[in-house]
Length: 142
Image (tube, rainbow, N blue to C red; front, side, top):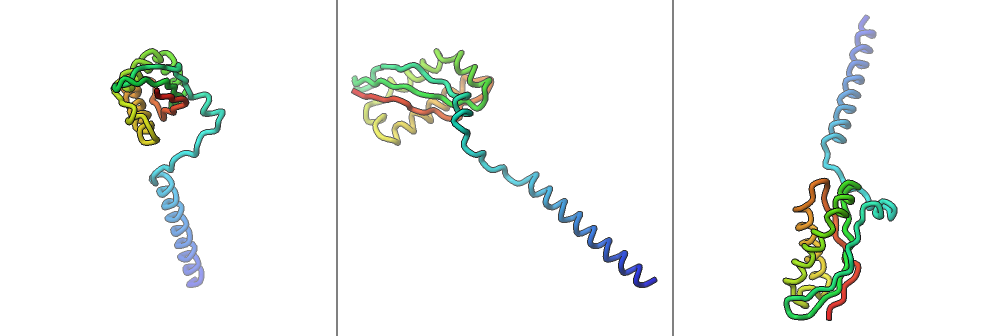
């Protein structure tokens, strides 16, 4: 009778340890911070991109810039909204660029700053999603 009791206790402990381990693993997976999703494929990106018209506008220092952007939405509803709001997006772009001087748009830092500012301003008018990133696809300053 002593052997059966010892085997029963040992099996109960093994089952309890297994259940505690499974619960710990589930809790870790459930509540751990989510990692960043991998980069979307070219096909996925194409479904989320909106291209602005090529724009030519004056800068604050009397130079002018010819510039064009591609805007990445976070979902297809946001893409459709961006397409409908393209006139507002163009307006925001002109407002932002017309206050810049040539030096502010020169170099990588200037473009990154402009892209981030445009992303922020466009997101303020969005209702069905948000802008993930703004890409400068063309820029000529004279």
